[in-house]
Image (cartoon, rainbow, N blue to C red; front, top):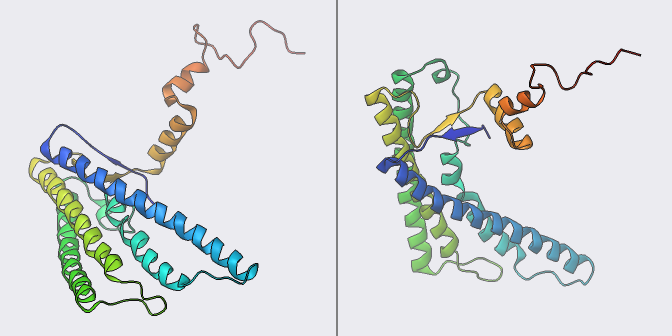
Amino acid sequence: MASTTVRTDDSLLSKADRQIFRVESTLNLMAGLVVFTLMILAVAQIVGRKVFNLPIPGFIDWVEQFMVVFAFLGVAYCQRLGGHIRMDILIGRVRGRPLWLAEVVGVLLMMIAVGALVYGSYLHFERALTIGDSTIDIALPTWPAKLMVPVALGLLWLRLLVQLIGYGRAFINGEEIPIAVPMIEDAAAVAKREAEEAMGLSLDELEGRGKDPDGGDKDRGHGHDPI
């Protein structure tokens, strides 16, 4: 995933971005917990089957339902961080208003596609709930897992709406860095930030530690003849 930063301020758009991000973070945490639970379940299945000859009833059914949860709950969170794969060979060469216009067009197309997916996935959920659809082995109801899809995609649509407004405002006002959208960092910025996070200091402070008050280098000897 590309390293990104998201500019925030006291505007209504930024506040909406942060509120939605809290929901996205919660759902992403839930997805992580589901993955962890699925790992434990898989270990129990293997040990139970191989050691005690007691496999977990409906293991495949549980896995199928869990997969829907962790596959979709983190999709809006990933969009907010700019983590989805994208091709920016062309738009990576433009700056300013042309770039923001290209982002507006791209986000609009995604909103149309996601809106269609929300509608279609909701129809699948409604159909499963109406007919009482269930899994083959232990007859788990499938509508809870199918409900997760339109919910997660609906949150993604809201995230795209926030980003559309952010890019649109940047295009109209000629902003250098939009609000509430992920800005991909270059390799130098990523390396600098990771170094600062690892050392707990800024690079300027680290460079200052290598200098003495008189402007000399602390790593070198003072007044000692070489042996």
